[in-house]
Length: 410
Image (cartoon, rainbow, N blue to C red; front, side, top):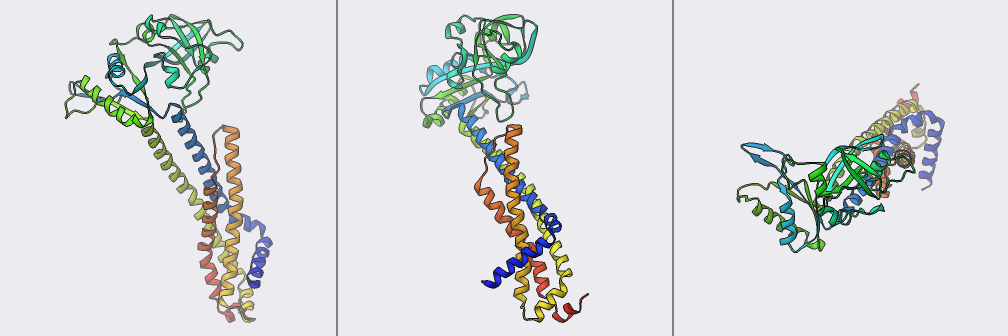
């Protein structure tokens, strides 16, 4: 035990005798561990944000969108042609008892104008169920009602971003008039801030109008009654898979699809979306960790090179120690501990830099970060393992020196 403590003290003295060389040797370890901790923290934060955004749509929600179609031998991709109709949506609500609520919608990017200001934004025509299913209530004013939908009322509810770009600060927005395609719309509400999606799209950059108003006066359509999306909420979360199957069966019947034909629509549940996003995040995380791990390996090679130089520089010292009774294992342990000390100190500094980098990313760029204790522990232990692995060769080489030749070395 005393010998081990003395060896550790000696290793510290050797490292402190050449602080610049020791610092440069540890640089690869510091960068590698710091990159691993920072990347995992960013990945964990982004994953948590994505899951929360998906959950904000509701865990008992499923989405139906137009699928691939083949017309006159020409195949159109997902959403290329609208294969969903207003009657499809109404039939689902009438015939499937597990549907608690439903909305359908069309959307397009259009220019909105208010006095001298204009803004290109997403204009969505949808139903009064929108705030309930999307869990997105107005922060000011009200949402449009079923009577507004039935009468194709010229009213609009603005997202926060659209409102900020169409109106001056402090200006009265509720009751004001905007124009889209020269159609005057009265603003009756402003939606609560929703923020960005996990794909970076600003959800608040939107203007919502009644579906009938959008179809007949604002968006227009080649065929009346076509819709771009249906969102359903189930009465119970456990019934979502059954509800998806019932919706699929009903739509296939309505679209007169044969058993050999593919669906001309696509159904997605929140579980499907969550699993897909989690899989993508996991793949990206593995790629980032693989890249960051290269720095650890480079750092290990640096430790090995410096220790090989140290063995050459201290050949006479090794010969003296062997001459006074030091055994091979003592020399081996001495150089191995020096390698471990380099990697441990580099690992600790890397962890500190990684945590600081993650916090800085949150403060400057607003990216969510979650420092994972498991990632910190694993990256530190891996750095120690790198030190042991790459320190073993120079330590073994030092221990195999011939004492007589070592004493003669100049």
